[in-house]
Length: 331
Image 1 (cartoon, rainbow, N blue to C red):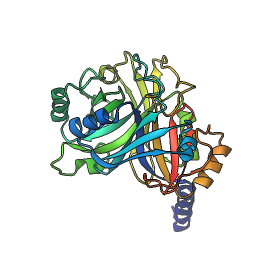
Image 2 (image 1 turned 120 degrees about the vertical axis):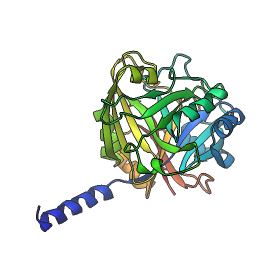
Image 3 (image 1 turned 90 degrees about the vertical axis):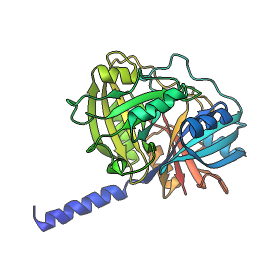
């Protein structure tokens, strides 16, 4: 390739990345029913550290969440360099999650917590009598070039939200997970969501938000079935990342196709609710782009939140093609 062609390729790549208005996946949020119980779990059973703890109310939050008359307690927690955000709706209370929820239902979302040693981390959870979602830790087989050797385990928090432990062998995952450290729990690699159609999801996450694909994998076999606790599971997995923060993983169940759709009447105070918060330089520009892409809005457009204790002053909440909430914020 000539130097001129190389320069054109570099310029084209720079233009494509400049068009991506999402600069980072800022945090992953979930709605909880009892904040004190959840804090005991995330800071004692798991080693998250509290960053902030605030109570908020007012028309700005009603517009941002789409829940009239809301009063929220919001706690931000850190593990490694990543953040999760727990929200309790003091009013109005939402609905509990379905007791028969499964990993292939399209409201499924989790965070993948990276561990240095899977057996030690699993023993820690077992000692705390944590509820299993998998039958136990699974090592993905070596024939799977993309995922072979990765160990994973699904479990649940007190509200039944699914979580994952994941261990990357050398040569797999982000190189930072191989750094020497005395910690057992290292940070959050990604949040995973179940989607009906990877192509439709990529049009939203890659085509509109501007995240880039970092890898794909087709996972099946007895180990994958027992990890997801879904008999006969065959998944097509696509990893996406922004310039900063954890990744977003799309899980398309090619088999079985029996997963239930996201509840059409789901609201932010319901316990199936998760939201992925992404940062941008201009929420107004982002909102215009999302409207042009016909993304369904939860919020009343771009909402100003004066002196917001969460670290942003403007935000907009939309849904992806399957109904998962994405909140775009401007620092």
